[in-house]
Image 1: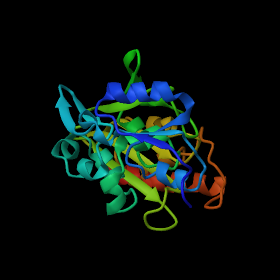
Image 2: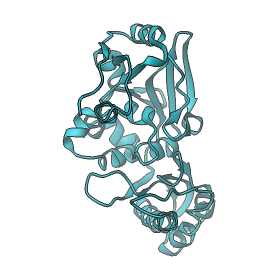
Image 3: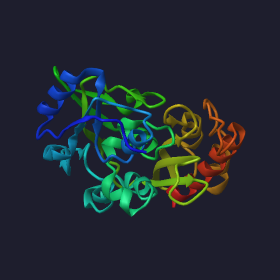
Image 4: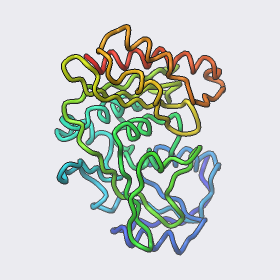
Length: 283
């Protein structure tokens, strides 16, 4: 289908983009890589009066080191994340998750900020953002504010980004030397996750000193599997420990039932995938 008629602007700065959004109000939509918005526009599930294209704002792209943080611009495409040495050294989990997203064409166009702002619970970047303690910087008419990933995702396709605001960058603490893995299950290649698990472990002398586990598509937002984390910390990194901890994976979740899978099947997947991801992360 052809989208409904809309006006289009491509600002050159964050300030100009915020102004455009403020002036348009509820009738505006932001386009980043366009991999989520364009299908919605073509199906006329959204009919904005104005589309604000962030592609012309150079300051929103790039990856840099800032003290003990790695900062990723919201408009940085997946392709750049996969090839960045800072990400490989300090944020291996992010690269592992990005590598599972769609195909090369999408990874050249899709952006980290666009995916996080879209907040699809089946999207593959929310759970890693939680596990990696990301902080998301949001700009608006009153300046910028920083929101922790745990507070950023607020429900189905809903985030802490307010009207007239833009996600500008994502700040990650360094997880240098941690064992990480992203385990994903989908019905067909390049499809959304039916269920997926993000794991980061710090292993010291064979003992799991710290554990972080996140779940994809087990609720209306990404979820930390805290019961699994508690079951892992202080234990030897072994197959038996991973299997026992993984039995807690579905606790506190609200897995959806849809055309791809029933809730109880997703709960089963969460346990199986968690066991695999923990073993892989532990090496």
